[in-house]
Length: 552
Image (cartoon, rainbow, N blue to C red; front, top):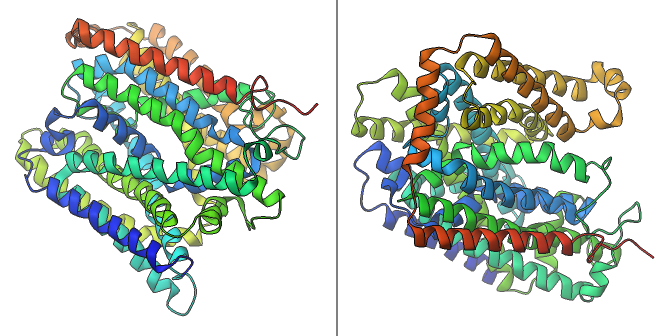
């Protein structure tokens, strides 16, 4: 084993405790599909915010984003900063309409505002993103980390033990999710958020101490001579200010404000106040993630430059730091935090996929089904999804780079959904035909861009493009502009029917239904202002005006 028995015991204790908590919460069975998938609309803001954060933070962030920070610096955490602002956008621009429309899933907005066909297209995109990028990938990455730490990745039985780890994680997280639904998921995510934040903070503290203090860490420079501690890079950098402000914002709004796995938590709120405050609290936690996920990756690079750490590849930086710099006992807490991130991704992804298939597909086909029937069928769907993902997850090892390319495609598919949502909320003339054409055209643009940038026979075309168009984030922004143009042209070139007018009125009237009391409004605005202030201070801290100063 790569860890001692004390740490292994702590990991096992956490594993048993979180499953027991989920099962204890599940002791009161849900009476219908809405209570199961939306926790009976009784959740309060601390639990909603923690679950929003835990849903987003998975092994992909702890392993992949820390690995990216090991290579390019703290700018890898810029995605967390963008995510924090997107949770702010969710609170300010989206939730009042969502809550007022009494939605069950986020794609249901497309049916109410546009058409059933648009809802199904967006549901399919949501389902593919959550199931493949979150659920299956989390099972695979979690089993990879667990088998490595327990020494199960070597020897004649490595394959069987890997399958065992996948099944163990899947059954543990899936068990309480199938029994308790979103309520069990949210309460478990609340506990797991505390553990993963504590684990990341401890790793940062011990890592900086091992590197010789803050001064030694901040002195680290990248291959191009720039500071590894700046979020601001030139526009032509892969993660420069221009692609981060254009393509990343589009991807972030699509992911944080329209994807079912996030919106589902906000829809479980007992009121608009708790939904908005939950999103703001999630934004605070996302800023904190810059320190507990991206910063340790950059510290690992400093340790490697000093010869105090060996990292075979970027993605192993986080785990290598854990097993090198953390003392026994504390290491177990950090590893439990990593396991918490994995478990929260599995339970959240499973619940989101189940609700999408139950309400966006099954309920639209079986319009006479009552809530009890939807609950029964939803559990069956979730069980089938869980078994499918458990069977698929170990096969990912045979497709190196597959998920990198899938995430690339999704970054290019986000713009049409982003555009249709914004037009649906704020442009009364947008109609169903325009939305459908925009979704189809935007999807086709994304696939063409992916082919040009990744298909070997088109490599000549890729290299003939200006540097700006070789960045997926920039192409996503251009695709968004094209989708905006398509939406405008088709909306004004086609008839604006009475049905379109009725849908527009419904959206606007529903948005006026949800209200907060005056004390709630004051508290919400105070918290939102604090988030903006802290976000700005952190941005300036990790900039050329702060610790990211260029070398003299």
